[in-house]
View 1: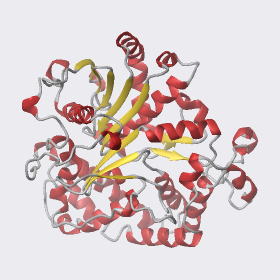
View 2 (view 1 turned 60 degrees about the vertical axis):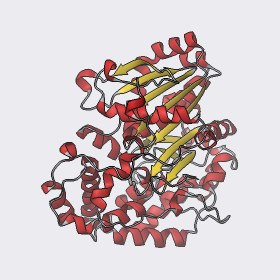
View 3 (view 1 turned 45 degrees about the vertical axis):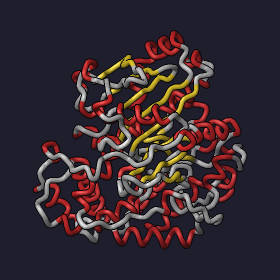
Length: 468
């Protein structure tokens, strides 16, 4: 039953609303919200507009080409059988005995610079803006005051307008900044660093928001990250709006790395919706485009196949103005939804799990979460809610272009994420989930480079000696 529950959850989320209404049966109990209790009454009468949503359109095109129930069930069972084989106790011992990463510097291979800077056709921004976004994402890890940031070069002046480390809340909220270069305003969020940031990364509840109220029944975003992004947008909204109007800003770019990359994607979603909302103060910025340039950010978006024509148009614009960088075997942008990739990494790291190695804190958190998942599966083989949890994670996807570097000097590929269990009947070769994990000799030693070299190698960032 566990696999059937997950398959049912996945199918019901990705079917058009009308089809779901026709196929609802009494046994499912709560088809409209498959992740929760089965003792809740069906509230479809409260959602007449959702049941009237027409099938077809941009969202349906993303969600329609799914594998059969039999294939989904087979893949689900295979994954459930794999998880736990490494051994929760081995993972627990390793994470407890390993030295924390705060004192560790990873080795940058070769010259540390990516051989190819992506083009505007790949990212939607000029190469100089892409490199500035990478530089901002890197400095948000190391700079602790307004005066410490150096973002200008001899060819491009960049002003730091806002830096907010959240004061007493720094340990639970990543820093935020606003920078301006020419007619472009960049909003940047810090990445995973504190213990609480790890909790923000790991929480997986997909939620709607008043910020995108017109599209709330179709678009869900990672709940904790949504709260963090909204906190900064609310607190600094008046200043951002006034400055954008004063300077005649033509484009707002959101950016960040790791957790910051996820926040930048949700920040993009939020600002685009607010600017289009005639009842929002952000509507004063109508005509300003918003896009995101994220680095190694996790999947943050869940889509339901019930989009109205207005939501279809909105999501297509969101997709066309989004990009996220994926570097080598980095597991973070494969989370939450690319579950088999993450398990491949854990299996490859078995040899390292028997050693008392110093490891990156983010790797330790990832393994700690994986260990807890192993315990759940080993102790609850027939628990349908566990299958439902995996079903939730499998719903997450990336929006827009994924700029994938197989190696430091490789020419990047532009990939798309069509989600879990995509059948790919058209034989597309540019899909994120067709890129499999590549085993290496020492996965734990490579982990931090996979995740950080893209911005701190210096990778795509502007070399320190060129900054002013």
